[in-house]
Amino acid sequence: MVNEEKRKLGTNRSCIRDLFEYGMKKAAEIGRENVFDFSIGNPSVPAPRGVNDTIAALVAAPDAQRVHGYTSAAGAPDAREAIAKDLGDRFACGARAQDLFLTCGAAPALTAVLAALCVEGAEVVIHAPFFPEYTVFAAGAGMKSVIVPADTADFQLHAEATAKALTPHTQAVIVNSPNNPSGVVYSRESLESLAALLEEKSREFGHPIYLISDEPYRELVYDGAEVSFVPLLYRNSIVCYSYSKSLSLPGERLGYIYVPRQADDAEALMAAIAGAARAQGHVCAPSLLQQMIARCATLRPDVEAYDRNRRALYEALTEYGYECVRPQGAFYLMIRSPRGSAKEFSDRAREKNLLIVPCGDFGCPDHLRIGTCVSWDTVQRSLPVFRELIEA
View: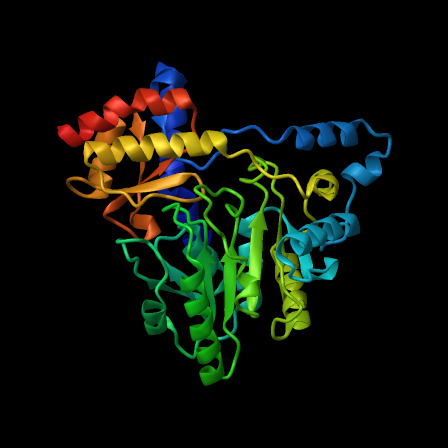
C-alpha cells in the first residue's frame, strides 16, 4: 500500500512540467529548433563568468573535504556572512549570519517555513496569480490555503481583497514579487497597505501574521522598476530566496531563509524552521555551492537578453490583439485567452508546436503564461504562430 495523496501528486504532474516533458519528447522527434517552448522558467542566460570560474577553482583546490564535505545544517559560516553582508549593504537591514538558514533553493525554504508556522487549524493566504506549488507546499505542511482572487486589470495586491481572506487562523501570507506568472512587480504602496493591514489584524487576532516573501526573481527587473525589500516595510517578514534565476543555477539548488531579528519570536521561529527542515530530510545545502556564494554573493545577472525578449513579445502580441499587462520583472508575461478557455487555447497552440502554459493552476483560468527565458531565434520564429492563432 502507498499513500494515495502522494501517489496522486506523483502521477498528476503540474501543467508546467507536463508541457515541458511534452516539449522534450517532441524536440527529439522533429528537432528542438522546431518546437517553440515557452513553458518552463529555465534561465537561458549563462551563469555569470565569476560563478563558473569560482566553481572550477574550488573543484581544482586540494582541500576536497572542505569543498565537498558536510557543513552545519544552517550553512557554512563564511557563506552566511557573505550573504548577510550583501543584504546589509544593499538594503541597510542589519542582517546577520545567524538570521540566515541556507537551503536547496526556494522550494525547500518555503516548505520549511510553512511547516514551522503550522499550528492546529493554520491557514496561509495566497494571492493569485501564484506559483502552483504553493498550495502543494501548504498542504504538505498541514495548512489550509486561502486564495485571494487576482485583479486581472493590473495584477497588483489590494489590501481590501486580502482583508476578506484573513481569519484568526491565518498564520502567514505569501507574496511573490516580481511575480510568477504575471511578471508584475508589486508597488511599494500596495505592500505598505498590506503591511498596515497585517499589523492591524495581528493585534486583533492576538498573534503575529507573518509575511512570507518568495523572492527568486528579485534581481530580474526592467524599466527601472523598484522591488521593495519587504522586511523594511513589515517587521514580521520572512524572506525565501533562491539563486536559481539570478545566477542561472536552477539545477544546482541553493537558496536561503532570512528571518529578521526584529520579527516576533525570531529566535523560536528560526529554531522551528531548522526543526522543520530537519524533519523534511535537510542535511545541508550543497557545500560546493555554499563555498561559491561565499565568494560571489555580490554578483548580479545580466538581464539584457530577457529584456529584449520581453519587449519584443509584449509589443508584437499586443499589436496582434492579445491582452497583456506589461511585465516589469521576472521572465514571464501573461496573456488573456483570446477565445475559448486558456486550456483549449494552449491545446491549439501545442498542435502548432507552440508551448504556452494555461494558468488555471495559477489561479487565473482565463490566462496563459509565456516564458521569455528563451533564445532570440525562438522568439522571432514563434511570432507568426502567435499571429496565426489569434487570427484563426
